[in-house]
Length: 438
Image: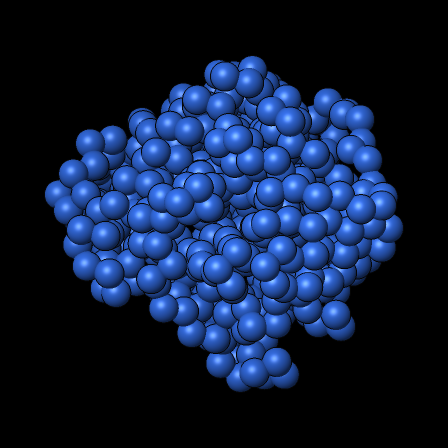
């Protein structure tokens, strides 16, 4: 169990980043789910109380399975409750899917992500989840060279995937979409959007519980005995199940040593400004859409309902939180919106780890015929995690066609082994940062 992934949630540096989260401060408090105590039996045990795990639980319960969710911390404690809040169509990288699986499978996978955005809207409506959802997303280039590459992607998606929701925003009209000197041009997406991720995650937990799912917080799984009916052990109890779904982001650690080399925990960070005057907040981004730039090491941001700028970026591939995080992120925010002024305050700064795969494509599959895993969302998972839960439920119920599209993807381990893969990735990312600057 003494692995990098296992240590993440026990690291006091990450816990300090959790405590200063705007999401945690602004989400209504909820009662705790009980710790697992004693022995339990169910059809499916889900490890992880984030978007993917809770979505799987909802879909499985709807299909008549008895489901138990085991969460090591609290519902939404990890990336599901701390991310940038942007729900975006597509995958972090669609190229591996196209290159490995061919046109038909790639189009089916893209359709899965479109369905994922519709699924968010459906669940918000069905379960009355108040999570501040706002439609609209802008993917913007910072210079002409990056604009050409982004426009090629725009043309590819529009024609290859027959995607009708994107519109190109040219150089002459970019100022009508965002009040920032940074951007050259880009695309506007009416399907994607943004929300309060912790409110949404807690809403999914309530939805799952309403369908009969048993949820246990502070119930870290410390061992899994594989077999015909796997046994999952925690410090105070155990669960016997017919099937297991592993949906633990970067935190599964020694539970699945064969998967660990294929995932790199990458730190990502977000700040929230003080509340702005409403007229200033309204002037920054048309219709308060979410925004992301097209750099490899990117910035992403949006305006909250209480008129704050929520600004994310400054990833760490070393596992070390950047020094002077709030001040550094504030300067990035002011570079984008200098009209905020040096006097603007940063009220919150937080972060956490996302699970990056080597090719940045999703990594779904089976360890054994009855143990499934969902990982590798690569920072693009708010929408796809919901569909990952739906697809794994379909597979367990006997309809594995869509799940197996993703399971067919080949994933390589990060180079360098346990000791050298982090330094190697840090050097690689330094090169990409230099390319972005040039």
